[in-house]
Amino acid sequence: MKRTLIALALAAIVAPGIASAAPTVNVRQLNQERRIDAGLRSGKLTRAEADRLRAQQASIRAEVAQMRKHHPHGLTEGDKARLTALQDRADAAIIGQKHDAQRGPDKLPFH
Image (cartoon, rainbow, N blue to C red):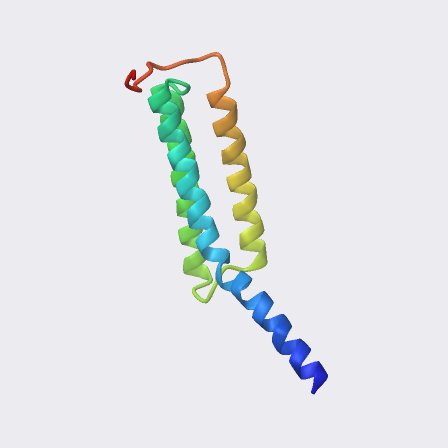
């Protein structure tokens, strides 16, 4: 009885984490795209830099689509690790481009 209760408690804790793994990919992707847009508006990114970063995001979206096509019942741990690595690389690219010496026009309104 005690083991059953412990097993049920662990399942209740672990199950939501498994179910939320796929939306995390989409949320992170959306946040990165918003950061690119914000960098373009603020002038921290040039149009060419933003285009390259958006192409990188499109590549990640295509990779996710392929993974979901091959694993329709959920991404494997290997898929998740690969996506995390791709998104980490994209994150580093966004940071690097926003903090380099190149600047685009500032499109934010003055207050």
